[in-house]
Length: 194
Image (tube, rainbow, N blue to C red; front, side):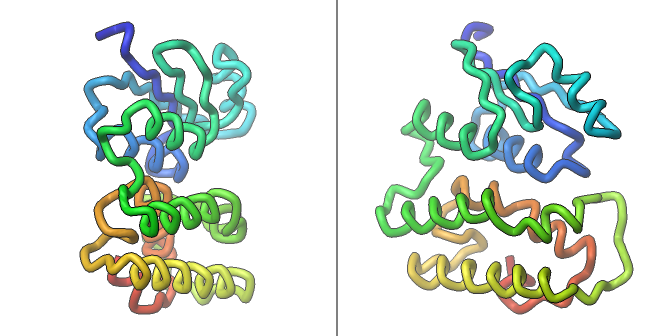
């Protein structure tokens, strides 16, 4: 099995939200027996660089090295590579409408929401006093609600997941409800429910 082992390098999942998403891609989709996970506990950006010195060209967490050696140091690159390598798993929904919707949402999460991701870090060991979000965060929360409501509406999702069965989009968004809960933002019904 050694030749078919993925090497996943993540930060402490209590604080590194993208690391949580990458971890879930292996854990929730039945690949945990094919992955060797190394958890780093960096305190500064220079700590991250020092710990990752042997993983060039990667310089951010999470990073995956596939059995053949490519270095994947981007969450969506990890997601797409796993989906391509394991088509039988169903990382993305099989229905074209649900799949396209899931991909659009996952990529928007990956490229947007800079206020929430940058200014409201994940810390699962802390419950902060309830926060009133500033206007930029309110706008991002409104966008989040619109996306989640749209996804569930067009795909007919009735369970807890955004586009039907659990898929990459749910792993990508997993840190968001955690973050909202940490800061106890007054969230709308769709966020509270999911």
